[in-house]
Structure formats: structure tokens, C-alpha cells
Image 1 (tube, rainbow, N blue to C red):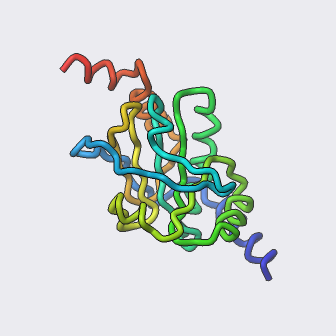
Image 2: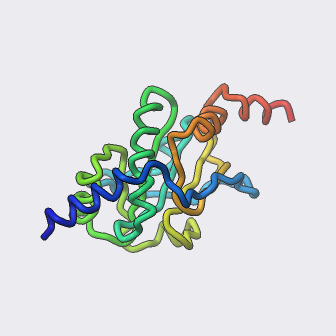
Image 3: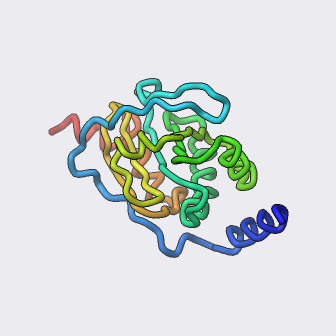
Length: 179
């Protein structure tokens, strides 16, 4: 039965050519410091946002029961691979599920980016996550710059350009320095 479910999920994800009900990456109006994030990964190592200062960070809140969350993960993996040698980090925060369940989904979807566990949902609450997936793009100085409610095609040229513009020396950083 589990094998059938895995094959069905894989087939469904592979037959979707693009995320048809994609969310939109919108400017985060307040441009405030992001809330604290201090969570373990699947291996039990703690991660904090401060550890990633100087890098652009995509923080994605998701759950395994959320089909749109699972649909966007292959594009997130392609994004992480495309920017692996750049100052960029992807942190997928699973909300309120066991590590064994999360690990199975990550393996099934063949994704290797950092996955954090918010087992009590406290981080999701602090970040005011109301729908899944919700994603925040944080600049190298730790400020929230963009938010997306719903799935996004993360490896699109437009998204990659926006991420690159937030990297140290990027266009958005240079423009911010002129103001």
C-alpha cells in the first residue's frame, strides 16, 4: 500500500509541467528583520538564521499533507542546485510532523536541501504562517524582502534574478545603498 502511494504521488508530481496555481513572490512591505528561527534539521543539528548572515535565505514553511507544498519542492531542489556555489541557502521548515514522516517525504521527492523541524508549530506561529506553503526571501542583512503565499516556480528566471539581486553586490543591494 505504501509503495502504491509513493508511486501515485511521484506520478502526480511528474505529470504537472508547471505549478498552475502558483503563488506570487511579493515585496514584503515592512522590510523588517525576520523573526528568530532556531530549529533542528533531520539530523538533529540546530540551525539559526544568524548562522546564514551574508547569504540570501529562502525560508519555506510546508507540511506533507499539503499537495501544493509537495508540488513546488522539485523546483526548490533545482533552485538550490543552480545556486549551490552562491551566497544562497534554502531552509524548508516542516510544521508539526514527525522526523520519520518528513524524512520519508524528502527521500521520496529526492530533495537534498536543508529541512528543519518545527514540531510544535512555534516558528510557524512566530512567522505568522496562515497558509501552506508560505515562503519568505531574506536578504544578506537578515531583512525580510519578499513573501509568497502558495506554491512558486522557484527555478524560473524571474525568481532567480530577484534572488541574485539580493546577494551581496547585487542590483537591489547597490540601489539600497544609493537611497
